[in-house]
Amino acid sequence: MRIFFGGTFIDKEKLKEAGINHPIKLEYYKQINEDEINNCKSTKYGIHIVKTEYVPNNPKIETKNLTYVTNDEVEEDKILNIFRENQVTLINSEEIISDLIRSKF
Image (tube, rainbow, N blue to C red):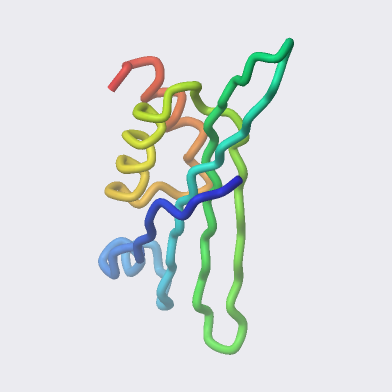
């Protein structure tokens, strides 16, 4: 199951620095995966990211699904907040998660 967590548009200044002249929106979803093993429920949280580039006459949508990030919903919410605040994209999402988990932010 996916639940919308939040979205943001990438800052215009960042886009201009990269030579991009159209808006880009990032949306973050909390992914909840429930497994039942030996009559014991286990919840694993993941992240689903949607990137929409509003190219004139040709919008482009990319997605990335990180199925398992953590077993802790509070930790998941913290990661999602960091993603939204820092406008984390699909490309660097796995590296950022690794860094956050290692440092226990």
